Length: 201
Image 1: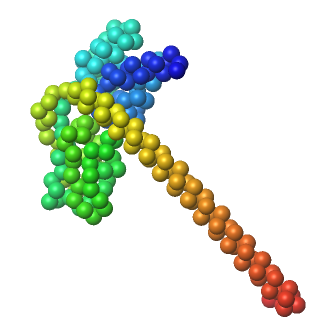
Image 2 (image 1 turned 60 degrees about the vertical axis):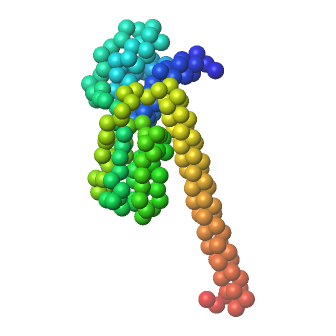
Image 3 (image 1 turned 60 degrees about the horizontal axis):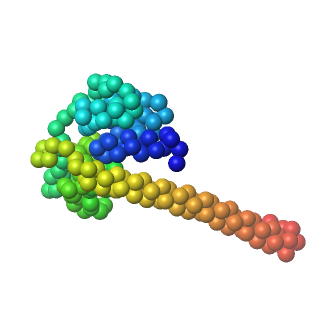
């Protein structure tokens, strides 16, 4: 493990694991890695607020900066709630959730697993019928256990999506090769038939 990766792990452990992307990165770990490389500042996590900023600054040996307003504002913790009677089962919210906290199937009602929701808000905008709202979470901050669980779910999701992409790419390549083989076989068959008929078409 390199010094940068070890530092990134320490920084990642300080983040709330909302996986909201408000920092401008695709999750808490990519943001941590950028901080460890010195590519970005430690004040880009609105969900973590001043407490998280102070912890990140301390780990980096820096003075804490005020929250970067370009990333948003620190707000009370929320939970996503789907008004199930209005849900059309489009799966867009399921695809958007970074921690697999929404369950359902195509053309079937979806629901949010409250215990798993990080309040990232990423499911709200994609909903075509605007049936997702954000409700106050009675717990003001994610516990260490909740953050650790969210991290594991996010990593598992990323791994699954990566494997699915590899499978889709392999399937597309195989289908293309199969199509080429079929076309070549047909061409050879036509050529053989022409030779058998004395070259007549």
